[in-house]
Image 1 (cartoon, rainbow, N blue to C red):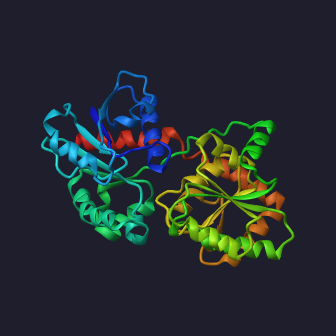
Image 2 (cartoon, helix red, strand yellow):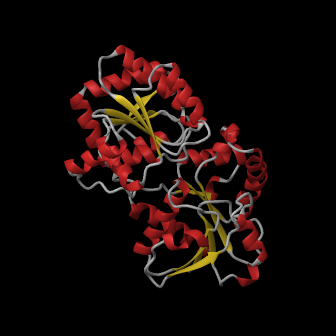
Image 3 (cartoon, rainbow, N blue to C red):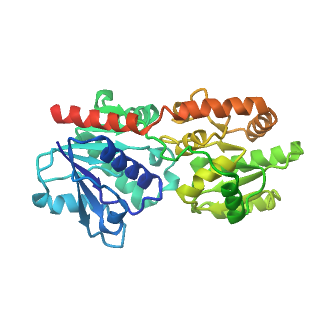
Length: 375
């Protein structure tokens, strides 16, 4: 098969979409020796994809700096005549092109439908585009891949998509679980001024991440115990950061909460290893990379029993009520004080994380490609 990967709208490999795209391309390059792939890429990041086999051809697309337009739609409409002879066009990080003047089969990956549940976190222009384009996209593509059973259910709820048109293929964690030397962890602590014992949260400060309830729960935890733990918030400094900082000051937690900003993947693995545990009270996730990465690195995980998160955690996590800061505080203390239980969580977490591996993900996508091609 000749398969096109529509990655034109991707501007970085550092965010969630970029990480997923990098894992997909890397996995396909390692596991597939039969099909030929054409990568349609923003020229600015085309060099970031290290594909060393002749099966991959990179087509560099000059995307204007202004990013208010969905440039993949413009490209595939205006240059349909110039496309290579593709059998399938897969859009892993954005809506599939709505109009292509060429006969080929189309696949789209849907990571989540957060804009339907939390529209206040998106701009008015984005909502207008998504609410008009997604129904057309889902109707016109030949097949849909969802990151989780929860996203598949959301597709049925909001768009009445036939369940036979949707396959669930779980992503995987590419973080290495190799042992980390003590001096490496010491360097990390020095670089970020990390406390000796800390609780970790990873994610952008969006409303659906529920960080305000986490801070309230941590406040209760600090006042109810004599434990020395601090809270470390890792992630890009998004639009809600100012209100979080105000909340931290109001609760007088300035000396107990550290906000690091963005952290590279290499350092992120060390954060998981150094942390006492990961707490993840998010209301909604299409999949949930941080809990999987934390389990991979042997950190106990406390997380909400919401959306797709139980699919990731299984029986290897402690579940918290995301609407109850008191429940978060009580379970934080319980896990920290129960050393034997924490060690059991670490063991079960590593075993659970092993189920989300590259081979399983790539075999899932190759199966979808094969079925769509044969249909």
